[in-house]
Image (cartoon, rainbow, N blue to C red; front, side):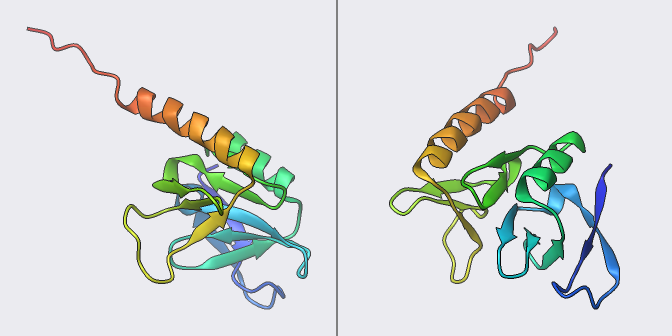
Length: 131
């Protein structure tokens, strides 16, 4: 599954929209709506269910999502930098006003840093040159 069907309105008054899983930066359970919010760089989408359920769905559909606290899961491949005290994951390389960020617990931060170092090492593997 490359796309997931989501709602653009938390009340469900809009049509269902197809969103690429690779475009989702993070997801968060919104208690007041009793829905999961899916954040992309340009919009927020919603659907019913638990954060745990949707994290598993994303991972089974080719994504690499990871729980970083009890309410949030991040797309590991989209995290560009992290911050401590308070713990945040950012999805852009450089700071800008109103940039998206996802809060994390201290344990979530530690686990994400480990996962990011593994992902970075995998991307940096050199391919031997044949002559």
